[in-house]
Image (cartoon, rainbow over all chains, first blue to last red; front, side, top):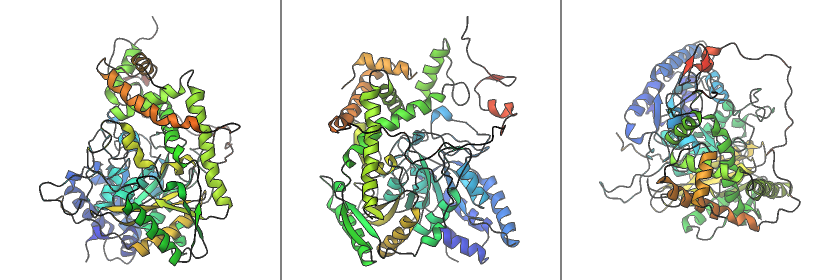
Amino acid sequence: MTNLTDLTLAEARDGLAAKRFSAVELTKAHQQAMGSARSLNAFVADTPDQALAMAVAADERIARGEARPLEGLPIGVKDLFCTEGVQSTACSNILKGFTPRYESTVSANLWNAGAVMLGKLNCDEFAMGSSNETSAFGPVVSPWRRAGEEAGKRTQLVPGGSSGGSAAAVSARLCLAATATDTGGSIRQPAAFTGTVGIKPTYGRCSRWGIVAFASSLDQAGPITKTVRDSAMMLQAMAGPDAKDTTCADLPVPDFEAAIGRGVKGLKIGIPKEYRVPGMPAEIERLWEAGQAWLREAGAEIVEVSLPHTKYALPAYYIVAPAEASSNLARYDGVRYGLRVEGKDILDMYERTRAAGFGREVKRRVMIGTYVLSAGYYDAYYLRAQKIRTLIKRDFEKVYADGVDAILTPTTPSAAFGIGEKGSGDPVEMYLNDIFTVTVNMAGLPGISVPGGFDAKGLPLGLQLIGRPFDEETLFAAGQVIEDAAGRVALPEPWWG
Amino acid sequence: MSVDQETVRRIARLARIAVSDDDVPHLQGELNAILAFVEQLGEVDVTDVEPMTSVTPMAMKMREDGITDGDRPTDIVANAPASDDGFFLVPKVVE
């Protein structure tokens, strides 16, 4: 029998149905892989007893012929999702030890579909970061390494962020799939860095209830998986209406897996000229051209389009997201949950608690958000940014009104970088990672990242497809065409244990 | 626009984050780097543009005005750093 951790989610589902192995065997194989991959720091909490109990129950259901869509499939959960009875910290010291008495809607949906929880995955603190280096649990090490580096002199690479634990764990085969969240690129950028597939669905496709809030008008949940088909399976289970989230759309969830294999014949794919940024590395340019060629060969029409406000998306994001974060994070005051540092009065307690509990990046963003919302600056910064957001959305609406079905871009401006290499002096250097992904959040659109090739050092690169609102099906159809043409990524051989 | 050290202290106060004197110059540099980056938004013509309030068109959902949850005080204070008899405890705020 092949190694059970090498299977895709779909292969594991089919293997369980054919009784080639049991859910308990599948779960134990992944737990063993987790045990030997501690040095990657991908998991921040393991739930071994819960996982085995869920696997045993899954085997019983399968035996009775009552298997649900994800029955017995072991997955990891980003620590931003509240999980009942299991520590949920958003990887912040201010929430260390927080053990929710409730389950997020998205994770509850997954358990109701039969999935097995292996544990909680590392991420940037409150999902604020692009490299997983801001986590209170320390950075995640990518399972990928640059080719040609001498043994003993190897650079430890970041897996991207904020969903770095999710991407590293899927890429290292510690879980079959993982949940993630995306506020400015936090699913798609780590997927691109680790040779995995990640989709941020349309804003409102997944309920945000029970997910620790960062920027509520931008946050969306989605999966990170080994293949496009696996992403369709995961999103199918995660998505759906929820009375507990007023921004969650009351729309039926289409059969995403059925869209796979639909192809791109007759589709019009837009290539936005504004994404050709100065100084774009030649290998990113080549990747993008290869993506266009693959889609054209599969019968799509490639057209140049214009999204004139693209360059303003990232600066506008760094007003809107911190503003919403400063408001959302006001709840961490040392009273209802999490850390408390005593002070001489209640104000002093708030200030000491938040100074001790928040990391540097979170403090920075809360302070920027506080500033742009403060009296005298609101119009100049926040109101202007929200107007520019309207213009960004309008750019996309015009392109889609002209008959374009999806837009193709690179996911990131470069491959993964080394731990400690970026953003130590100037925070903006790190923010530039999200230059191609952030527009999608600003416009509330769905976006998928699919592996498309490698850089000169053998590191994976991703192609991004951006869809019309609530048309994730076209992204799965076109994403599969890219996956078929580029070839499935050979995930790195374990060197970590 | 850039912020001076006094403004950094004022923002920290508004954000309820204690900052030491050593933190201020560092924070000032970082905040000014971000503010310099967002400065370019000033060149966009936003005349007659409505600010975005909702990224997807959606109507506020209506539901029956009924009780859907409650009666679980122990769950609510379970994670509190300090609680007593179902109440959150805070330092004295009224003399």
